[in-house]
Structures are given as structure tokens and as C-alpha cells.
Amino acid sequence: MNKTKISKTLMAVMLGSALASGSAFAANETTNKVESTADSAGQKIDSSMNKVGNFMDDSAITAKVKAALVDHENIKSTDISVETNKKVVTLSGFVESQAQAEEAVKVAKGVEGVDSVSDKLHVRDGKSESKSDSAKGYAGDAATTSEIKAKFLADDIVPSRKVKVETTDGVVQLSGTVESKAQSERAESIAKAIDGVKSVKNDLKVE
Image (cartoon, rainbow, N blue to C red):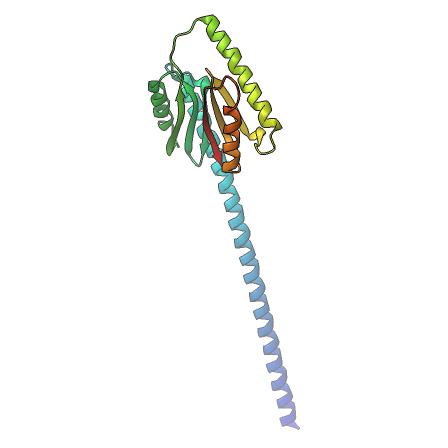
């Protein structure tokens, strides 16, 4: 009789131990899953924060470069476009001379946070003009720009909203982003076909 009681007691103890071990294992598994989920969420948050941080850094760099160009008395900054991507600054637009272009690049490189500078500046035709000729040229350039934009808007291939058009002395500059090389080539082809266009500077980026 005593042996039977002892056996039952031992079985109860063993069963209790097994249940306790199972509960502990389940608790450990749950803890590991929670920690893993937390780590994953933390990594996603860190990644998002880094992206936001990079965007803010690029925006700040662009603002600083523009301010530095405005403050420089020998550079006509109103005709210079500044873009920053991952601390790489791209300067595009028109300057009066190659010396101005080089000076603009030098100024941009001197701004804190800039890793490198891509120079896509174009030097204007330096021919002297009278005020009336200059006014006519400006009016002609404005008409050319408008006509090109209208053609882009009517075209099924060119993403007109993403393409910036500038015309100076008959020289058209295309900037912005497109989705393929075909779109870039199509935009350039349309611009070249417009009356009054002397040449086209294609600075479109394919993304």
C-alpha cells in the first residue's frame, strides 16, 4: 500500500516538473519572439529615421549652397539651379563665363557637409547685344520655352511635369528626372524640332 502511494507521489512530482519545464520553454519562446519582433521594429524605425535624416541633410546642404552663391558678388546665382542627393551637389543652369562656373563649383565644395560637386553649368554666348536685341531674344526664348512645354504636355511618352525647360539665346536646357532613356531622348528630339532652337543641353536624369 505504501509503495503504491509512493509511486503515485513520484508520478505527480514528475508530471509537475514536466509541466513546469514546458511552461518555462513556452515562456522563453514567447520572450524570444517578442525580442525578435522588437529588434525588427527597431531596425525599421532606425532605417526610416536614417532616410529622413539623409533627406533633411540634403535639403540643408542645398539651402546652404544657394545662400553661399547668393552671397558671392561675382556669381549670378539666379540662373543656377542647385540639387543635392546623398551629399552630392549638382549645379546646373547658365553662367556668364567659365571662370564663374569654376567659382560656383569652388563655393559649393566649400559648404559644410558637401562630399562632391557635379558641374553641369553652361556658359552663355558672350556676344554683345543692344537692349532691344536682348529684349527680342528674351521674348523669343520665352516663346520657345512655352512651345516646348506645350509639346511635352501633349506627348504620351515625355513626363512633362518632371521636366524643366529653360531657353537662353536659343539654347534649350532640359533638366529634371525621367523613367527611361527613351523618355530622355524623346524630350530632346521634341525640343530640337522647335523653330528657333539652336541646340539642346540634355541634363535629364534617368531614375
